[in-house]
Image 1 (tube, helix red, strand yellow):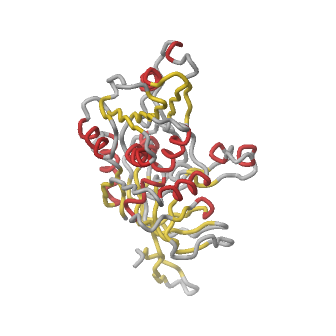
Image 2 (cartoon, one colour; image 1 turned 90 degrees about the vertical axis):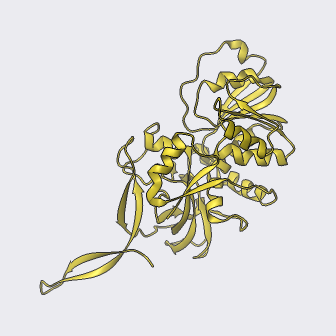
Image 3 (cartoon, one colour; image 1 turned 60 degrees about the vertical axis):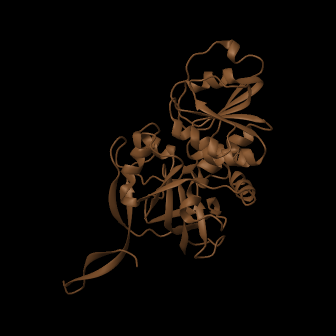
Length: 349
């Protein structure tokens, strides 16, 4: 049953009557660096090409943490959250890609213009006029969310609502980063959280050798990495035990870039997979020489999503999640901020 708000409405003779207005609950960010606060809003209605989704679960990504902490700046006030799984309950005019009642996922990239040079060149992840879920348009830390149906994905049936949420960003963005690694056989993952724990399973299934570099002394994360099939796990302050063909940096720590460059072989690639990173430390040219390269990952495309979900339909990927009630969003963010999680935190309305 939907929550309801009682609204007072004057009628012609001056009499005041009450009637129920459907409403929704959300955790809203008013200012960076402040806790999210619960708010009640009138139920939104989808516009042209949009759908209204009843949120079943929403994962918490490190990007959400950057939004809340003010490391990146979007629209305010905003409802964060872009790893959304839920069911369509209302369709806007012209929407019809999914039937009402269909379970869908909503990712970070929420809308593109479709007409800029990037969109026309099949690089919509670099669109000049994008919208991002939970950053420039309201996201899934709520009971309901409105989404552009073109940027929703069908979720494989074998994943439950909670376990599917990390796939919508940690999985999708991580997969784009893995593709940038090309045919690299030995890959280093710097930072072993939500994205790396999914990508490690994909990479080992592809018969690649994965080395996991964690925060120094984080033996729990190292044990977790080995449990998921990583060939080696140790602190990021340690040199790689063997030259890497490629390295993917998930941790938002700029100092890891020179370290990863020193770990990759000639012609190797270092891929920075986050939307935000602290300043990269100065390093000597010799660490970059011999055709080593540094790349960044920006957002995703719908083609990435289609390819990713088709791939994992055949791979026994399992996500590690810790569910929290929606009203505990601040507690979940704090656990992520302080490294108290293996895998992903998930809000459940």
